[in-house]
Amino acid sequence: MAGELVYVNAEEGIKRVMNNAKLYAKLLTKFKADTSLNEMLKLLGAGDYEKAQIAAHTIKGVAANLSLTELYNQTLELETQIKARSVNPDQITQVESAFTETIKTIDKVVEQNG
Image 1 (cartoon, rainbow, N blue to C red):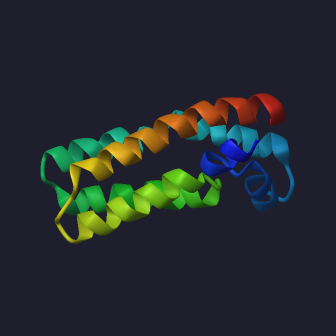
Image 2 (cartoon, rainbow, N blue to C red):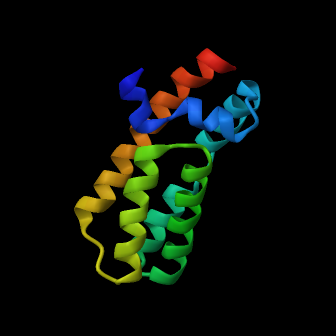
């Protein structure tokens, strides 16, 4: 369970939805289908920093609301780099990795709470 907290703090997330574990599981499932990360990566690749920053901000906000801790932290750093127009490719890799691990953990959390 401790490892899961790094990616999905389910206890905190469930509290955020007034202790409704089924609703939290539904929101996590909906998050899995979100395409914001791919859109942000395309925008970065195209050099559209303004729209990429908006996409990063959106991902960061959703991650915060769902208590997706590591994804939030990594996206916060990427958003800062996008604002500065100085994106480290390693940070993009960190965000992608956090996203992948978050999705894996979401599956476990949904199974337990859905």
